[in-house]
Image (cartoon, rainbow, N blue to C red; front, side, top):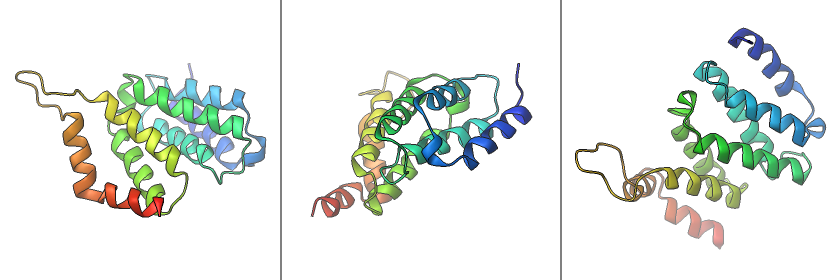
Length: 154
């Protein structure tokens, strides 16, 4: 079993690897790393950020690798991995930042939709979790998301 210190070294190698050398196989390896329940949140966050970087339109990787990176992100979001707790907000902020910069907007929207879909449509009796509409309202209040999208369309 590899520990965080081992993964730190492996992630450092991935982070320093030329983006042209990224392959679907490497994306699968990063997916397995993200799904590892025994890794610390910081290690999983580094892996998620690397995959997010690879998924971007201007990453320099082959489009098939970008598609694999998007699948890895979506799978990570859908997972119940405890290490992903708290990373959803970070991912949402990355998406909003990308939309503000007019970078990979369609991919950012796809990821936002995946996160929103995790939330319940309505709050169960006695529940405290946010609902989909509350998350969307929060994105609108915090980031003026609708305005950003309209600006990107023009």
